[in-house]
Image (cartoon, rainbow, N blue to C red):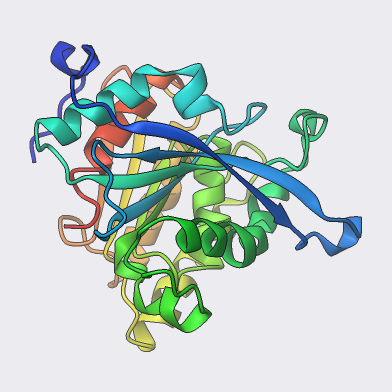
Length: 282
């Protein structure tokens, strides 16, 4: 695949073969400290002519800080247009994309507590994935037992932007590696307050632990613009990982897509998604 740095205009034009975005509601009981059930919602993109008799790969796609599940599809509906065109033009295979919310409530959106990025791990594994993959036709085939979700991890990806990129590492990669084979951290790893060496150690330990168990990374597709506020920390961490790990191999199961002049904005993140979907599930 040849990388591009400007979304082709034809991918931003209305597509005759339109996918569908629908609401998915669920309840999570995984935040024991709050001692209450939380009603949560996500948006689900179903490709054009979604057929429940077929099996689809699935991407869980997280928003950034201070916004909600509305970000990717509702606040930026051109994301849906790009997806429709990619599938219609056979740039990527039809897939299901789920945009959940990191936060617990409308008030919680204003929190500065970055522990949300790690704590999402339980909601993701126990509530969101089983709920979604019981309803929609994925390779899990409706069997959402832990054993079967592990068996079907090659057909499941997690990606996110900014705080969602941190969530990709913390909730999905470090804590649910056995459920996901594909990762897309878009703009950052630990944020401005993180410890680089600690993240390097966690990434290497995760790769090594699961490699020894025969559960492999299919691909980590890191993305950043070189003018992005999150670029320096992301670059530093991943370069240190590459220097110390023989499990992560550029061109085989890893790449760092760099947008010249790219900043911390939706234009860059849509380009990240455009490229990630041409790598995931291959």
